[in-house]
Length: 257
Image (cartoon, rainbow, N blue to C red; front, side, top):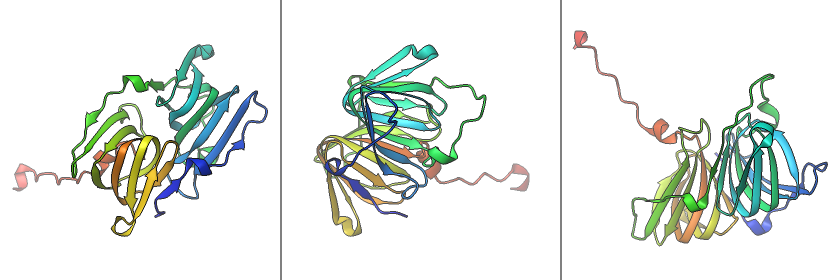
């Protein structure tokens, strides 16, 4: 198992992609097969470009700045414009165009090896399953409080939508939540200060700010704390709650009781 990893926004280095595309498209790859067996993640910048692709991955993304635009549907007639805090979910097989105006976007994809090991089936019908969750429409529910403070969550991508990744936004303010991850998880800070404590006796403290990214492998003991912290979480698998429940033995048939 790899340990928790902390990627500071100020330290991220971007490389140009799709050099044949108009405008600028740059990418900072953060998590790939050398770290994870499940999630591929990074930060991309789209400005004045148009990248056409039929995706061979599921993707959850959140806008960090600028305007992120996705064109999808028949003849790309559906135009999605996402602003800061908006979340996009798209399903493997979707045919679309990535565009943006100074857009900085955090993304998480499944499978981790989608560039080499997840080819689309020839003749497979493209999907149109692209969802846009506007930050202004999100409704949060209070979580159980540990050691005072306040914590809330807004669940966005659930098993009803996805078969792979989930997506949630949560807030933490003056709270302390003990947890051990039952999933692999990649997350990015959207505001305030998210403090994640890990390591022996929770001795490692990561003060995560806007645009900073944290990787947590399954089985990581930690504490979530925060000072008006808000964070976008992407776990794998999406149905981890169901998988983590103990299996109850089936009752004996009446004939053998």
